[in-house]
Image 1 (tube, each protein chain N blue to C red):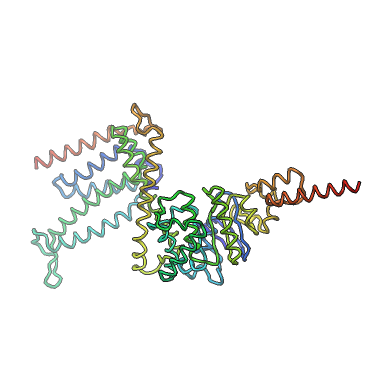
Image 2: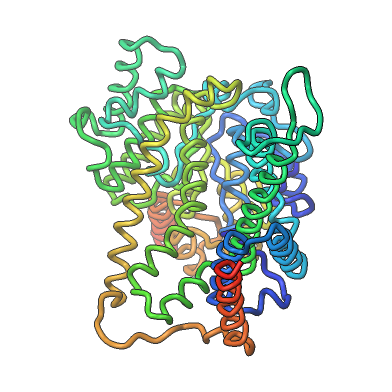
Length: 269
Length: 252
């Protein structure tokens, strides 16, 4: 599949990708084509050549609204999305479009707002909330639509620690429900902790695609794409730990195992 | 983003103020001059200027729209002008008259000429250059800012409209399909578009104040003044033409 905004200038160049149930992070420097790819998956753009199939549906043959039953997209900037006067109405908008009756829509909305921790703000005007809460509202409004595929564009932007933990929980629970979570993200630590698969885009092509651990072991290739590895991975590498460490927990476990080994070695001597 | 077409031509190198003089003359002369010929001569001049600037094809959509309106003027005047006397031919019992036709044609030439004159300004001058030229001439920078933000805000609102539409389509709102579906989708989107424009305006006002927009004292300009060596000659020439036409009208 290729895509160009202007004829002759391909933004995405002959991509061939398949997404499965594994939660997947899309990374790459600005302008690599991440947002364009996501818009294509959502049907907002249609490929110039080739086709995209979502659960067997060709995105060229349905409207974006019809596709929204299967794919949910949380926009990077919540202000682009929020347009109702109360948080509850905002989150109910999607389910109502999916032809749920008011009662069921309200239920889905309240449930989604509980998941993002905003159940106490049902009647608040979303425009009075801060940026991080607005972002959570926009996530809830997609969660309420209960799609099988959920795409998050920069979910951790403007989130403090608590917000990030909340989003982490949501992603984990979606994974547990067997849903595909796809995200565009620049926060490598967040990628390492939460995503099984990572796809690296560079100048409209797939540079790397594999399990997150494998991708982060290709330090040189990542550097070519102007990307860093997670801090803990860098630390482990500088300490000379041979394997690719992805999280603080892994790091501690390795250290403990290592010191145990050293102790047993010392006892043997 | 504007209608401005970046080219190098004689017309492009003329300063914005002289083009404003030209618009003034293009409005006044054909209406005051007591001759039908003045109308088409002026029109010919304006069209030639558009051709010299190589932007005539960009003026076509505007002219096409105006032509549609003017065609109705020709039809109505040819049929119902009060001075109608000499019939060209009859369609059934309705006569098509020469007097009305020529009268309408005069109106068409004059109106098209005004549109062309404005097109010359809009298509060959960057909006910011125009505003800057006016501020140099003594226009208050505040009004100058309002003018230039009008030029900016429309493309910006179109872009915002696109993003917001995408966001709502993503949540299952049907915006594709027949006219009724599109109209129904359009109105709920107006709220967020206007709201986000207002928010942007507020942010921008703050950003301007932070950078000393309200500071008193002499202000300098970032760009060098665009000067054209024959500006004064052209401006006085245009004023001269207007005066001559006025005298001609009084004497005839």
